[in-house]
Length: 248
Image 1 (tube, rainbow, N blue to C red):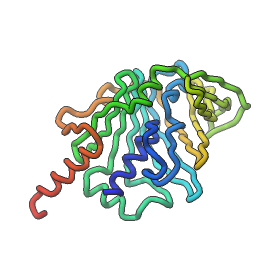
Image 2: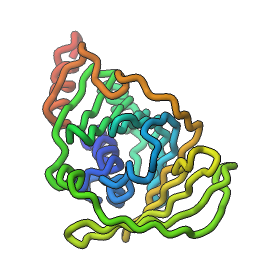
Image 3: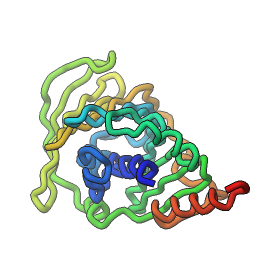
């Protein structure tokens, strides 16, 4: 089960949920790169769709995964094929186990207004719908102080960009910092976001950016899918269904 659980925990961490520790995901906690301030990096952009490469660098090496991302009405969606996670800490047998469980494709959705998150597994026709942890939910109500400093002009993946340092400080004095490249000909879209932690560096690089509004059903689970109250309950339910299949 640990091979099934690890990518789910990694995804939750990437979406900015601080209760995931480095020990659980086998690497640095990248939550600071995608915390409650993530949407603020987009300025006046209220909707987009894009592909992205997400990477986590640590002492053991670099772990990467490709994703489809979308945002609309303070809802963020990240969809990925978990069998395609690449890195030194990824077990060789993990992909086969994920496929067998029907947990290979994952769509993770965070609704900032409702303060809820869904983890949807289309192959298993199942999803977990749960509230954000209190610390994460509270952070959405308390806008951190933000300072933006221009660092210069650079090209990123063929885009002319203005490079900025963003510094955030919450009401508890906790500080976060990200380096962001805004593409000047893409409505200042944050084409690259990079955050450095004590244990590693997290980078998200967007590509094929579009500004047409995503369909509303991208941010909801299909009605015929089985709903669970948490990721552990979902995995137990999926395993029970497998055990009930003929020949097992």
